[in-house]
Image 1 (cartoon, rainbow, N blue to C red):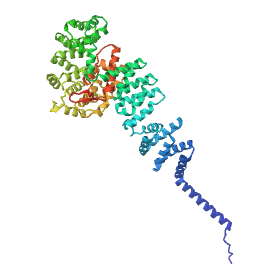
Image 2 (image 1 turned 90 degrees about the vertical axis):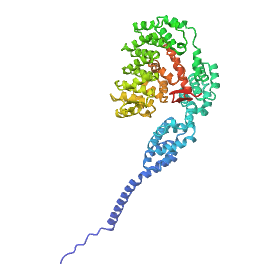
Image 3 (image 1 turned 135 degrees about the vertical axis):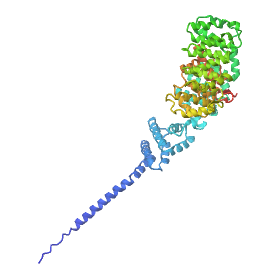
Image 4 (image 1 turned 90 degrees about the horizontal axis):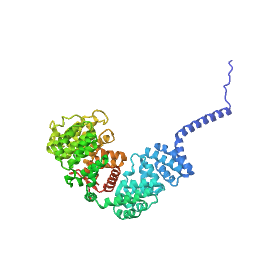
Length: 579
């Protein structure tokens, strides 16, 4: 008989232990899974609680933690905005720095924060306003210069109350750049700054008052000109009052009256051996007021100065003497002018002055000499020749320019195109039954887009300048050449002025004194400025450095004051005052 072995039956204690162990494992796993799922929400809840109820350091730390978490939680921006607005006022420098950094992160990554913070600006106090502007300016789509004048004025008024004189000066300078549109907001503050303890702040306030305060500038500047303890400030106020009181052609008439009618001093300077004195004397002769009102007997011996200067290789004096002879109408000197214009290949500027002088006496002969200069290797001479050819307004010279348009080599062809465009020849046929306008568009399209790529960047730049002079909208393309230091400045500056763009004048005022002097005098840009801004103070072409400095300051003052009231006459291509 078989023996039955009883099955093992675990005790109730063991069964109970296993059940509890299994339950524990299940609960642990559920907790882990639940923690993984719910921890971010718990973390967010924790930092939000800290943001609203914690201490100030805890609030700032919580805001710093919540910022990146907002990318995954669309509901966070209102809380972040409220927390930031709550923490910014009365922050220490270290706290403010961190909070603004957090704000920069928010406006870069959460576009809706830009709108939310922008809506807070108008109701914010000055401290919060400055902080919010500092944050918003880091947003790619928000710029203070695009804001309403009231906001721009408020920012500058806040800065003008700084204890640092440099910041007050910077605020005044920015007010001057924005012009009269700020007048109703800044008048009271500028009046206060005209009496500032720092003389440099007062000097900046004089400039701002003359530009921005159109309704009260006379009343405010006269006391400064008469009573300020600083002589420099007195002179600046008086110089600006003089410009304000003598607008338009009155400036020219007043300036003309300042010149003496006794020319004995000029004649004595001509006889002197000092190079600068001789040039100054000849420059006085060629200046309009003197040049057209002198008796030839006074200067009948001027022509020997040309041969003497040439023999001494004093080419600057020779060029000015030739120009003086042209302004005085001495036709007997025409052969000498043409001889100099054709020779002296190593002196391109002398050749241009001689050709220009010849063109004043004989348009056909002098115009031909200028045409030859379009092939000059000097970009300054090439551009000056093109600009002068356009000014001649002679049908025969224009016909020759069109007929020789495709005979010249690059970049001379570009300069020729610019000359034709400045002369208004855009609708005249130049080749292959194409008008100049059509030819330029086709040629520009074919050339490379890269303005730095040889050999196409130079002619392409000229063609764009010519198109701009004809009224085509190519400014965006031309900006690449404006920042290319190798591209001729005169060509692009002239095309811009001709088309009604005052950018060259603004750029001129931002240059260093050395750059200004070289452009205005060495490159004869002052003459181009005079053509396009006929109401501006005259530039006398003097070689005397202090006089040059004064002339530039006067041009700077005039433009800063009247740039808001000048308008462009497209028929004459000139900027004239509307006063």
